[in-house]
Length: 295
Length: 293
Image 1: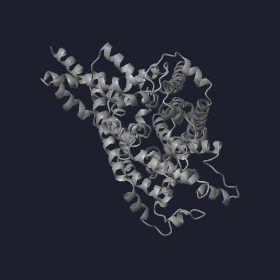
Image 2: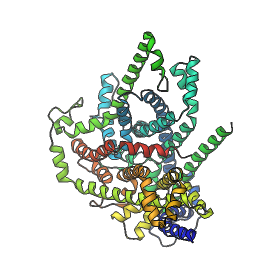
Image 3: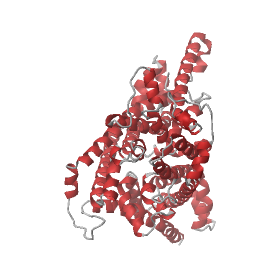
């Protein structure tokens, strides 16, 4: 009797949540997979099944290849900048936990992660500005010739990586700090008694012990790197908003195919590529964690 | 530079030379961290500085950090010429409703999936967990067409569709329910004659206050800083969220750094203030994203 009432409650309470969840998550995910196999122009009535044609076309699409290339460079660029910096910073902040300034460090490094993206990107856009930006001012001061940061195809990628890393760093530091707090103190005691110096115990104890955290943060950073869009939208669009000047990233290419070229099926197949990338990254994370568990 | 807050401080009191060395290292580390923290804040400081500059000073070379003749002209101009306050209000409504929805759905689903053992619910939870890793960008285009079919483009409702639930939120609450709410407590309430709704509202929810607060802050910032979804769903000037309004404002033909910076500074104020006040909840929420295993 008591049990039946319990389950009726569970059903009544859970049903609306699951309905919403199915409608706004499961259904569109399924639709992405389905649409990727169809040629669907919003304008035309018929929607023929084309199998893997969209994917075959993607492999030869120069715009898509450019987008995939740029996005990959950005994602890995952010990873390479963020992870070592974050690990080192977290170690230093953790070492100074008792310091009165610890709260300030955490806030300052974390703030870029929470502030609205667009205003923050505006700040960087001015810093990188070729004519008036402080970056070129500092460079000329050091005798380096000023550069057109946001107009050069290579340099604009660097700018996006800097902006994304600036934002991603706070998150990585925070997760590493949690990791440091959970490390076994006894190991460090033992190391110190054996005469290990601070840098030594950082390199030989903290770095290996924090490997699962590093793996997790790396995957999160890479996944969000592959979804980069707003940063490219702000930094690499000139004042006229000319699309030709934008750094082509996956999400941009997807949105253009869907809303400018009205090729929804084709855009969906790009979304599937993005999904596969994310799944592969997650899979790598899990296998590496399991291997570590076995060793 | 040990990676651990050293208990050494007690042991070395008798050894002034080692003590001085430790203090020197700490001072050095503090110097590095202060420099780095200031560098992280610098872009935001520059932005606020620009907001107070006159048009002449904006064009000055080399650029200045602190405005020489601070003026409020940029702020008044931007507030008069753009519907900035409307955009802020749109974002605020969107973020509040999204937060409410995410907190409610996560609390309900997290509790039931955590405390009602059944094979079916385990499968449901596995599905939710596995979709958690799928980025929003993967399925936003079909979701856009769903919103369009409902006729909800350019409305608060349409915006909300993308931000009603958070897989991670359900996961977070379920973890907390399992670890911090003992079965005995629920059973005791039931034996005393409490109904299931009463148990949920008066026993479970109060115990989940901490994690729900953390989740709420996380959800609010997620919606407040959302960009791609509002960009495609809200496309009329009166329905823009602040992020989209600002982004499109900067691609307008008369871009003036001073005014852009003033608008940006206005937008930054609420999120920075909120963060400073809710730092603990926020840090707790974000930190818990790292404890997925």
